[in-house]
Length: 227
Image (cartoon, rainbow, N blue to C red; front, side, top):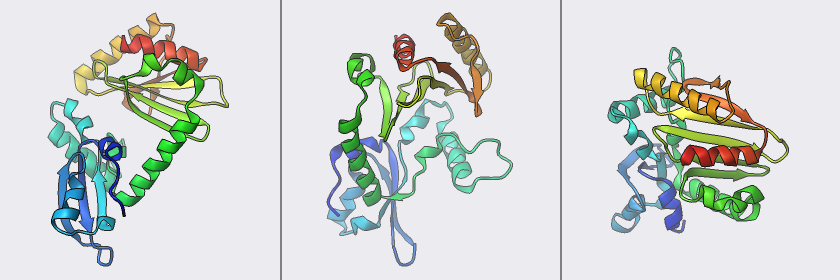
C-alpha cells in the first residue's frame, strides 16, 4: 500500500487508529493524532500499513460541547454497542468508522475523481457563497450532500437530488437542555422571517427540517444563514 495523500489525512481531522493483526484480530497498537500520524509507525516500527484501521475520525466535532470528553465516550458506546433502551443511535455516529486505511483512501480517491466530474452548475456558479463555509461535501451519482460550518452552534445541511425540484434542508443544534430549547426557538423565528414558518422535527430533538422549493432557494437561505 502506498502512503495516502495529505488531502486524505486532512479529511480525517482528529482521529484514533489501530494496527490489527489480520489473522487473530488482535490490536497490537492503538494511537491518536492528526495528519499522517498513523503512518509514522510504518517508518519507525516497520508496521504493515495494511493492518492499519481508522477507529474514529473527525473527533474535533465534539469540542464545541462543554462536556465533550464524556459526550464523546457516551456517543462511542451508544454507536458501537447500540443499547436497546437509548432513544437515539448516538451523536455523530459517522465519526466511529472502524475501517481499514487502505479502503478509506480508495473511497477518498474515487470521491475526489467524482467531485471533479460532477460538481453541479448551481455550486460552481455560487462558489463564492460556499467558499470556506462548508464543513463537508459528498457527491454521488445524481446526489449532492453539504454540511455547513457551525454558526452559533447550528449546522445547516441538505441532500440535493438532480431528479427532484424540492430540497429538504435540516438544521442541527449542537446543544442540550435549556440552551437547546432557546436556540431552537431563535432558529424557528429566523426561519419564519425568511419565509419558512413550519419547521418539522427530524429524527432527534436537536434537528428540525424545512423544504425549499428549489436549490436556488437553498443557496439564498444558506447565504442568509452564514451572513
